[in-house]
Image 1 (tube, rainbow, N blue to C red):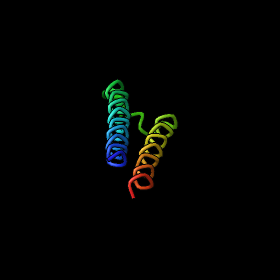
Image 2 (image 1 turned 135 degrees about the vertical axis):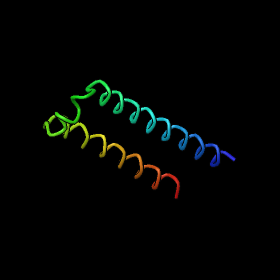
Image 3 (image 1 turned 90 degrees about the horizontal axis):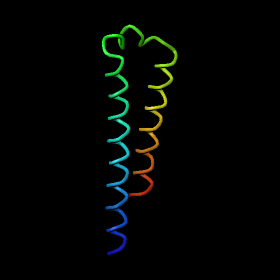
Image 4 (image 1 turned 180 degrees about the horizontal axis):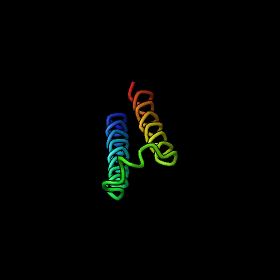
Length: 68
């Protein structure tokens, strides 16, 4: 029973982290408003998107290794 609860908890926590990160990233995009498309070539924004993608990949890897 504890394994089931542990997996459920980890799934909920990982999904919640993913949701929070996605909301924060979308808020950043919304803050830029119409400027987002103009500055999308900006190096800082590309780094931010890259870090976001890396974080999502880490979350996916964590799920795969935790829930085999």
